[in-house]
Length: 330
Image (cartoon, rainbow, N blue to C red; front, side):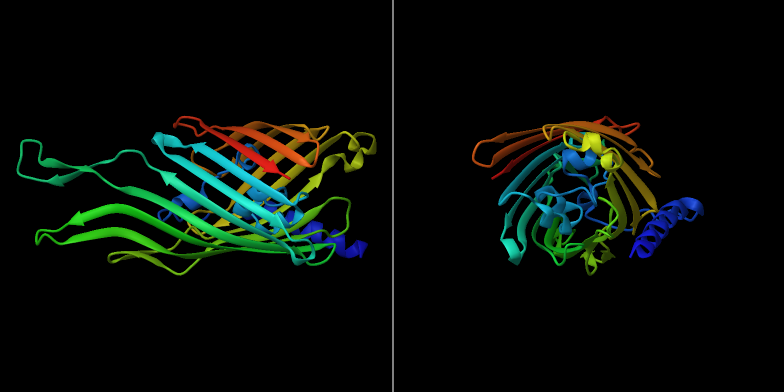
């Protein structure tokens, strides 16, 4: 068994190191419904998106659905707000219920607010166009997840989502009105495996697996993403600190449909299970890179707990992105 554990570690680290080693053509503009790719949780975003092996509450549903099986409470509720670039805002919420040996069940929702967008139409005027009023645009995804710890070493989870996006409508010369909207189902799948070496865990997830979506005559795929990740509490090697502190290091190797391979690295330090400091970095992104954040957890008598997380993400030439998440468990 010890030999097998060492093989797992060597294979995983070899994949992580080798992924960015060879230059390939960047596959841009290959997918739609891009809001499904945005980090919606402040805790995950502060760790540079390296959340595959870290998530253990309702927020895990958006990264690796297997993570909700590690939830300690009976019920966990998650609410988050992301102030994205160019006045775009994303709102997310999730709730998970623990059913004991039957597994954990969760519900999630993400909605996009693109702000006011003024529509125009080509016309024989001095400006060459006329305004047609506000364009009704938006997107949302509603999901149902299930996860269960199959053995003391292996956890399995799935997440099925109904996603929809509407981008206004077109008025053709024959007065025909065509609505630009698409909708359909997408699927997430994830695993977590503990080889037996201290708190080390390794796993994988597939997100946004779906058939093609289509706007009028143009078909496209959702942002399918395959991720291989690992995590471990570094203080496993310092037993004297484990009673009051933890320092989790997480690395995710990401293979997206619409770009070359990427690496997410993040760390999370907890003191007395009350105060968390986080930092992370995303490699091979045009603008995204460094991120950081803090978290506070407060337990009330009777098993009721409150969590508040904040993250700051640098987006290069764009404004920085701020996120805040609130969690309640009982």
